[in-house]
Each structure stands twice: as C-alpha cells, then as structure tokens.
Length: 306
Image (spheres, rainbow, N blue to C red):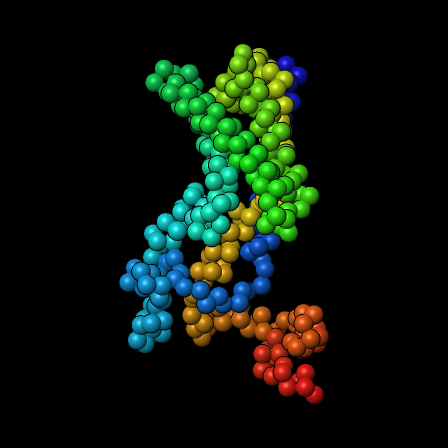
C-alpha cells in the first residue's frame, strides 16, 4: 500500500512539474529578442514549385506586391520527419542515428503507452475496450526495450568514440545513466520472468482514485517513481531541446516574413536596433554604448585601423 501511494504521488508531482517546466521554457524562448535572418533555403512552408529546387518566393517577379503563400502541410510534414525519424541526424551523422532513433522512438512509445493506459482506465473494463489496455502494455514493453537499448548504445558511444569527446560532459553521462536505471527498474518490474504486477491500465485506474489495492512490486514501483522524477527533471536541462526546436524552426529557420512598413517585423527590428550589445569581438566595437544601428552603419575595419 505504501508503494502504491508513493507511486501515485510522484506520478502526479512529476507530471505537474514537467508541464510547468515546459511552460516556463516556452515563455523564456518566446520572450527572447527578434532573431537575425538566416538565409537558408528551402524553407519548409514554401510553395512546392520553389521547394523542389531549394528556392523561395523572392524569385517571383514583384514578390513584394503579392501576399506571401504559406504551405502548412509541407511544414508539418518536415516537422514529422525530423521529430519521428530524426531526418537531420540520418543525413548528417548516420553512425549516430541508430542508437538515437531507438532511444527517442522508445520515448515516444512510452508516452503512447501511458496515454493508452489512461484511456483504458477512463473507459473501464468493458470487454469491447480491453484491447486498449493490452495494446498499451505491449507498446510499453517495446518502449522499455528500445529506450534501454538506445541509452546503453549511446552511453557506449559517448565513452568510446573520440569524435564525441568534445561534446560529452558529465551531465550527458549522468542523464543516460538516469534513463538506464529508471527503465531498467521498469523492465525488471514488468518484463522480467516471474514479474507479477498490476497492468499499466490498472495502475492508471487506481491512481485516479488513490486505490491502495493495486499490486505494484518494489521494482516496478521504483521504476515508475524514477521515471516520474525523470519527467520532472527534463524541462530544466538541455534535454528540453524539443521545446527549443520549435522556436528554432518557426522563429529562426523558417521565419521569412517580409519587413513591411507597419508590420510586427518592423517594430521588432526597430527594438533590436536599439540594443547596446557587449560582444567581446574587438572588430565589432560593441562596447555597450553603441546601439546595433550605430554599429551596423559604421565600418568596423576602418575603426580598427585608426
């Protein structure tokens, strides 16, 4: 009974902290200054006639006279390929793709398994809906195997690959070990031979009413507690890059709006030009006194020669 209550409390607390942490991160990114334009093409939401050869709407004659066309379907398709299949990693670092794909796709399956468990708990034990809980259990089992395999593989790569040495810090090792330990306990509790636990759907159903009667073994309970702690921990680390990616894509890489008179872009650019940067690079002359507008209007090379 004590284990079940501890599991319920940490699940609720972990989910709440995760949601609040993600919201704080999103607000932090949303309030950052306006970006510098990245002239990188193609942009995912371009019309297909430009997208196919890596062009943009700026190729059109008198493009400033027509409304900008945005293809949101292409944008969502590009996001789906990157989020689910890690397309960028496949194209630019294929050796790292297999363990990363296993790890990330296993996490997606974990979320799907938890979601199905909640749905199964809500619809109850009606015979017509039993497949939802069963599917959630099988998906959860696959998720545990994939996350463990991917995390162990990534840890081995981090430790042994000289090419990753400069990109590997103590925090990276700790995070992978955290996942391995948490999902290792889940595996021992739910997948090990002789493991006897309430199903995920039964645990979810019991959690809604704080029912102490659900049988949760020490291994499974420890795994659920550690996974809840992991969820609470993620938004406050660099693992929250899933939030940063949204802003990187939509607010930097894909933001090709025109700087029209009276537009929000014009007001944001004006605000940015009033900033007084303090970059260390001497050729910029960013001493904290000059505004961006003054720096942009000057010739740094001439000032260095003086």
